[in-house]
Amino acid sequence: INILAIESSCDDTAAAVLSNGKILSNIVATQEVHQQYGGVVPELASRAHQQNIVPVIHQALAKANIDKKDVSAIAFTRGPGLMGSLLVGTSFAKSLAMGLNIPLIEVNHMQAHILAHFIEEPDFDKPEFPFLAMTISGGHTQIVKVTDYFEMEVIGETIDDAVGEAFDKSAKILGLPYPGGPLVDKYAREGNPKAFKFPKPKVDGLNFSFSGFKTSVLYFVQRETKNDPDFIEKNLKDICASIQYTIIGILMDKLKKAVKETGINQVAIGGGVSANSGIRQALKDSEKKWGWKCYIPKFEYTTDNAAMIGIAGYHKFLKEDFANFSITAQSRYKF
Ligand code: ATP
Ligand code: FE
Image: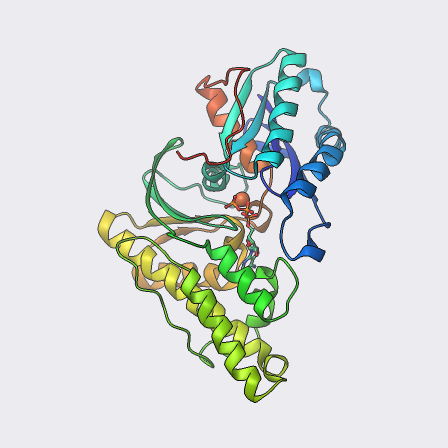
């Protein structure tokens, strides 16, 4: 079974070909235009998707050495994401499936971030059901109880900003370019995580909040640079390490609580922030400290990619769960 998968929910145009759950190709075209604006500009993203989608799909098929006649189904991201971006992938997927007369499969982007763990990879164990998944990305922060491929329940989520935004906005305050998350990670590696202290929010249950955190970083930087204009420059590594340490503390506190409440100690992470070296280490430590079994994705499956859409599509194909051709994109798509 050959699945051609298309992902266009935000600012990356991606296509992948999977054969029986194994990746034959996984192509991502990252849009550079947004960097100068310090964030994704939806209108520009949508236009760039229109330019990129044909070459990216051609490249994915060519690299996989698969003719489009041998594709069994087209899987695409229906949502959640930016409407203008989703529309490009959705209309393209629909037309291609119609033209080739093959099934169309709709995929929820956040479920796909979780299902990325089921991509066939040598040396990587797949989680067993039930497990907990923490999806940490640019637009979401969720703890999900996963009882089957498509049986997922959100048991906790952010009530305001996503954790990726907390990274990116803190980075912006420090004068770092967008997206700042990976840079905070880079500088944090050489800094002292306990150099500065930031408050942790108090939020009920398994929910998260990051807007107050971002504000506390802003006030801290304003206060310190008033005394010393070179404060950021002199302390960048320590500030990044302290920010990252606090964010990871917030995530791990809730994850611990979720494990306790559900009695499930198999834990998987997904989404762009799961590329963060600190959170990856914290999960590895939890295996030794608390006997959890943790699943940490390969880097290429953390930020947006089409391979994860393809594996979700493959499991829907096995269930013959196909979409109708009248389907539309959904920018807020809950599961
Ligand atoms: P969503 O999946 O919620 O729709 P998205 O698709 O825009 O959002 P992803 O591509 O999954 O988000 O993740 C992007 C986010 O991950 C950005 O906020 C980026 O800063 C963050 N990120 C990527 N690498 C790292 C890292 N090493 N450390 C911290 N954050 C990171
Ligand atoms: Fe994503």
